[in-house]
Structures are given as structure tokens and as C-alpha cells.
Length: 246
Picture 1 (spheres, helix red, strand yellow):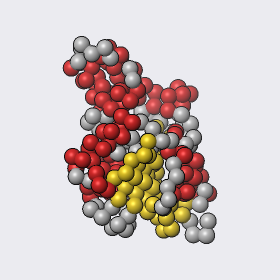
Picture 2: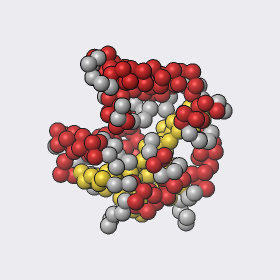
Picture 3: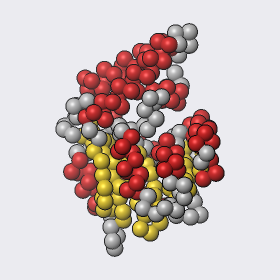
Picture 4: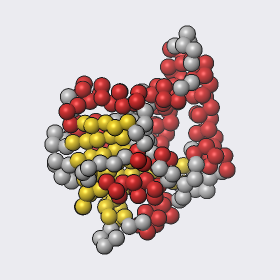
């Protein structure tokens, strides 16, 4: 099954591709956009859900998004047109790590996309290149709430515990000014939404060539979550500013 199609179906009921509820997303965006005429950049924007919400909340804001998926960017443009914010949104199809802009941004977003840069600190390095003086970075990534099993690491990748994660961020020259640690409810709601949506789609479309694979994949992912990483994986979003003098 095409990975992009699978992701689009799985996130039908949870368009923010991270374990955050709507209130958390709204507060994080509010903390990050201190200026009413802010420029916002999302590195790895996907279908643009973070940017669309920011644009809808602030009529003075302008936003740009970068992603390699043409299908995702097409959906972002269509959603922007439905919301009437298309004139304030610019989308770029290219590798986020290679993106260059003639102007800086007041808020850099990268939530759940650190894998595209090779980890948390390389993601912050990319954000630093685009950040205006006094600007904010909103970054979201996983961490281990307790020691993971080798199977959990194989599924989700290498993370640190929360203390170590924050220490590394500070040592890299950043100061957290706000943050959000996803609750158990948010983490569980995200997993149920993703694999429930995928399974539900498969049951509703038995004639589709991808139906059987989607149903089997939803079962595998649900089992991985429940049996392998549910008790060890956490997710944190940080609103960061450059530390003075660094």
C-alpha cells in the first residue's frame, strides 16, 4: 500500500500528525506567534494542518510550508482555499533540509519531522538558519518515559529520556519558554484514531485492492503500540528561543 495514501487515511480523524489535542495545538501556536504580523515556516509541513490553523487564527500572519510530497501539498492548497487563506500561504516542494529563503521567519515549526533531518539537534540546526532575531521555534519529538525494549527502539527509533532531551537542547543554545508533554489520553487517542481510521476504511472498502493490506497493517500497528511501546514512549513539544549570547 502506498505509504502516503496509508498516512492520509490513518489521519482522517486526527489531522495533526502528532499526539496532541486541539487545545494543546492552539496554545502552542499562540505561544509561538508573539507578533500579529508574524511569518511562519513549517519544515516538513505535510498537508499543512499546523499552518492552516495558524492562518485561520491570525489574519495578519503569513506562512510557508516545505515538504517533498506533492499529494500532501495539493491537499494543503485545497484546504487553504476552503478556509480562504490561500493568499497567505506559500508551499514549496523540496527537501526541508535543503530549503533556502530570502527572508527570516518569526516562528519555525517542525513537529514529528525530526527523522527527515537526522534527529532533534540537526532539526534545530535547520531551524536556526531561518529564524528571525527574537523568533521562536516550535519543535515536537519523541522521548522515552522509561527504558524501552529493543523492539520499541526498532519500531520508533533512537530517543533519550526527557531530562537528557532538554539538556541537549539547552547545550545547543536554546531556552524553552513553553512546552507541552502529551498526556496518556492524547497518546492513546492518537493511536486509536490512526489505526481505527485505517481499519474502518478497509472494512468500508472491501473491493479496494489495498483493503486487505490496510486491515492487516492496522492490526500490526495496534499490536505494536499496545504490546511494545505504549508504556515507554512519550512526546514533547517545546517552544524555544535562542539563548542570549549563543
